[in-house]
Image (cartoon, rainbow, N blue to C red; front, side, top):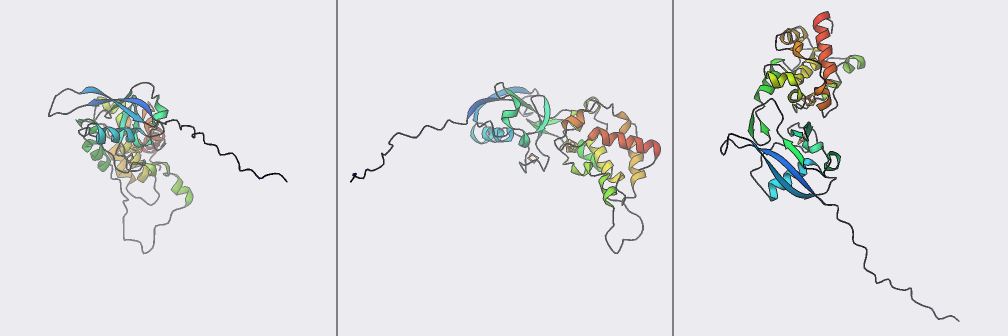
Length: 255
Ligand code: SF4
Ligand code: FES
């Protein structure tokens, strides 16, 4: 009878798991009016998993290297619209931009969005942006008595403005627009997108008022159809198309 044997115990050490971390340089345009009137670039080498986001890298710098680094963020999930910035020369949300997608072999440049006054580092003064938004009356306007039941709308009517309901007011479109860079008086794509959302809403009765507001010298006719806004929108809104639809509504008065 064969003598039972024990299975051979493999005492070899498990293979080392390769580290996912790589060294990436964040090249950030710093500005602090209390220190200097000039902005300057500063390099921050960081160890980071390339599957992480630019926002994670900014947090790492702020929490571990330089607490004075200033930027806005809130939700960290592409909803609040507060962390639009120029990353490698393109407007993006830091919380939606993966390091691996933006060529981490080279320094990643990060700066404030253009066309709005920089207050500190990556933070701009959003007041003119939100003023233009308020100016187009981004709320439902109705006449007559309040209905006793909900205002009904067909699926087709709802579809007409579905795209523009997705706006998160991040300003990536407006701050990528060369017309806005040259003259901050232009309402800008985001305000027009939010006017579109109500102009084409069959329940709304303030369309004519909004169209007149956008018929102004600083309104939709300033748009030069460069498509920068559409390219910049992190929500995939067809911004230029919405602007064109508002222009057409101004000419035909049909909406
Ligand atoms: S239209 Fe797009 S890019 Fe412009 S503010 Fe809205 S979400 Fe941002
Ligand atoms: S932090 Fe809210 S959209 Fe990026």
